[in-house]
Image (tube, rainbow, N blue to C red; front, side):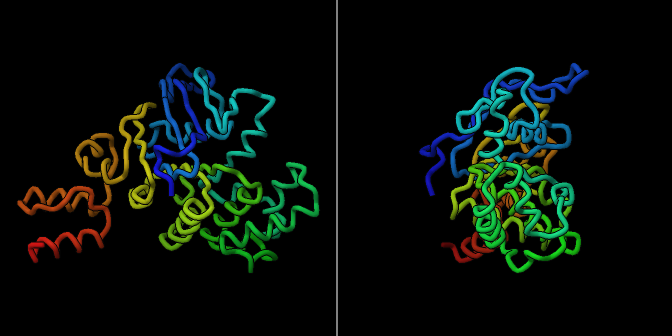
Length: 285
């Protein structure tokens, strides 16, 4: 996997401001952002911080009030190229039921392809490949409403994958799922990013999900308040909490133990890493 600094840029956000029609308050205020091809970027922020608005700007659902958003070099504000943007950048929303439109799974996955005018002989192999990629091939003839929340979300992802985007934006895509459903979706997303090279922009409020990203961006009052690798960001426990956000449990525990005199390394994010650090401390290695 390429280091982020050597990746080609696929998304660029330049001095973007956004206000909803009829409102003076800026939801986004001079946001600058670059995303590398194949990167897994997680965006965090409390409610009202602007993270979901930013997600919709990347898919041309919204256009900036001022500033520019470029996706694979395409200006999202160019009304003639909206569908070009959406071919490059797909989007998965919080509630999968809002994206499932057909009564049979394979027909649902094919829906976007038909709207794009993909030739019929090409649609079936794309649908089969997309369902296989999310581990849902055996449900091709099932009714979506009979599936679990996690399965529905994987079908929604398959519908986006079938259009072969280079970027997928997930706007709180696991918020309505139980832990098993969240794990299932995260496994798919991580594999598609690491093995297929699809760029992932992951909007979430789950710290454990964000910890899996290559890079974090923390939003506050419409601005980028903090940025860096998960270990760097979550090591700043107090600064993250000052933004109204939590940190992974092990990061908080590490800070508390350090305050009690245990010299643990910074950047501990998982239970396994904590166990290893404590064992090494005890053995003196």
